[in-house]
Amino acid sequence: MSRVVVIGAGPMGLAAAHRAVNLGHEVDLVEADSVPGGMAAHFDFGGLSIERFYHFVCKSDAPTFALMDELGIGDRMRWKATSMGYYMKGKVHPWGDPISLLTFPHLSPIAKLRTGLQMFFTTKRRDFASIEALTARRWLEGGSGKEVYDKMWKRLMELKFYELSDDISASWIATRVKRIGNSRRSIFQEELGFIDGGSQTLVDALVSDFAAKGGRLHLSSPAEKVETAEGRVTGVTAGGLFFPADAVISTVPTPLISKLVPDMPSDWLQKYNAIRNIGVVCLLFKLKKSVTKNFWVNIVDPEIEIPGIIEFSNLRPVKDTIVYVPYYMPTTQPKWGWADQQFIDEAFGYIRRINPAIEPGDLMEATVGRLRHAQPVCQPNFREKLPPIETAISGLLIADTCFYYPEDRGVAESIRYGRLMAETVNPR
Ligand SMILES: Cc1cc2nc3c(=O)[nH]c(=O)nc-3n(C[C@H](O)[C@H](O)[C@H](O)COP(=O)(O)OP(=O)(O)OC[C@H]3O[C@@H](n4cnc5c(N)ncnc54)[C@H](O)[C@@H]3O)c2cc1C
Image 1 (cartoon, rainbow, N blue to C red):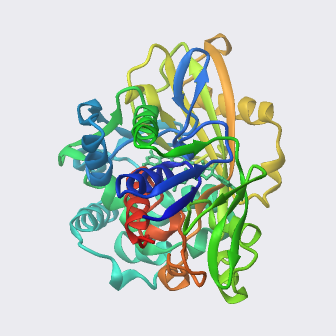
Image 2: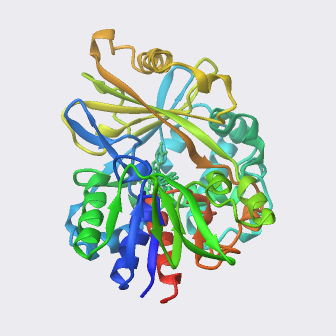
């Protein structure tokens, strides 16, 4: 069988390496970080092992469930009734079910009807090819109406994508609406999942099964160059060592490809370089009091510069209140250069505005995680912009989280793609 080098030990790289070793290949998995898991990795937050970036599971995440079953940890999935709120005009309003929509005070009756219909039919649609050429804005204005876009969506989009917010694909947004809209116990009750012990449970199980089957994981080993000769891969230089390979699977963000694979033909490199990503500065608070009863609260308020907060302890039960505050933005934004403490002070001020009963003494701990390539920016007709995963260099496969467009980045889809890439490797 082949010698395979997988680059990146996030969910996609772990799934690829695990599948490749199961198929009988000899596998080296190289990871730049000192821990495996990528965006789903845990860290120690004052004695609590938790994801640096919040992670929930939806009912449609079938590749995750299948892999957990295969690893013998299928019984570690947990489901919880959750809710969403919308903070608008100084108050948190319930959102996300028919009754909340009917009683929402800031939309006209016709806007409510159109929103309800658009969201309902989106959860039932099989595919979104017919809206592929539309922007999210045009699709939402056409379905729910301009009033709804302006009041409910515009600020959320602007606070995530900034200058790019008017060029986001409708199918990408619709796929997100469908994934979350279908994660329900009934039409009246949202239900989200988490893995007992967090994403680390899955990462640990993958790493240990991979190692037990002879796979080699090399942490703190950033891949520096994919080596080639006569148009095919010969190996990877990582952490100063050379790993020979008949096939290489890269799962790192595509903006890194031109440095990693300088031998790639320039028309291919142009395609990778054209894929934009935004970054995230993700804050994590440990508090003595709950902020709201909701898992997520969307925020539309001209004086609050975040699109929402995620009260994670309303999903996964942990001792204290755990709240994530993600600041997504293009890394060209001046705010990207803010110091951690500036973000913490601003976000804690917003939390106190949402729930004025929270006092300065209720803040137990806060930390900040940053990621430069956190979210690919998918424009209309994005699929046409994607190069194939089998590249111009024989034996080299490349994908990252935007390759499963129109699905948004997610653990389940990264697992599906990682396995698919491993299955594409030809035996020597
Ligand atoms: C704030 C936030 C919230 C999220 N919430 C959810 C959620 O609720 N549910 C969900 O399913 N998904 C969620 N996701 C997305 C999910 O984490 C990703 O889709 C998934 O982790 C992607 O896995 P991946 O392996 O494709 O990429 P990554 O996790 O990015 O893995 C890539 C790996 O490559 C490594 N790497 C980079 N350069 C090199 C190099 N030169 N050499 C070697 N290694 C390298 C990186 O260190 C990383 O480990 C969230 C992400 C973020 C940022």
